[in-house]
Image 1 (cartoon, rainbow, N blue to C red):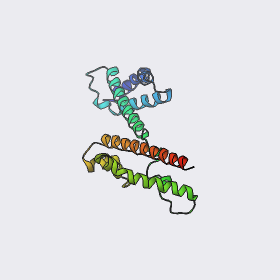
Image 2 (image 1 turned 45 degrees about the vertical axis):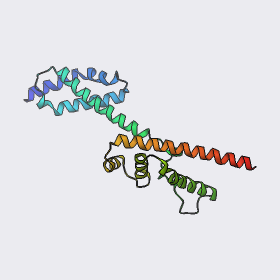
Image 3 (image 1 turned 135 degrees about the horizontal axis):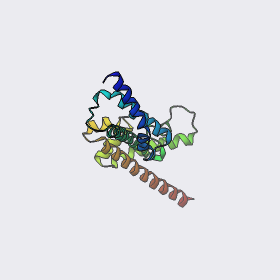
Image 4 (image 1 turned 180 degrees about the vertical axis):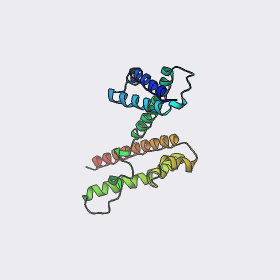
Length: 191
């Protein structure tokens, strides 16, 4: 593409700015996000000028770039949301310091006892889970492996690992609450 065609092409891109902006804004993105995504479209278009074959209109070509950027953004948002949807026992991961047996004497004795009880309870309850669920939970929390590493090790998908870990945590949490109610009932009966 020669210099004059390049200048004409850039001028045409400017005329389509509002059209591309509306692609993102009409799908619920904020003004700032829509501007950023529109800029990404035009950056991609500028980088790809040499590959534009004029087999379609410029509007169609920009729209296809915008849709690809939109799909990538939605995939990213979905993955980010999925990571945020993790459910933890008492809202803490099992490797969280609050669940570890403390090495120092900084915590009060009753808090140390509670933390030690939680870890002991988890270790005791883990064998009661189904085989695959138990393996996923053990590798995730006691071996600190990523979902991808666990999936590779067990020859299952990362999504299956996430599901098994989430279900395992829910089962352990339910047993913890049941055991907590039972011990509270015993204490009330003894009093």
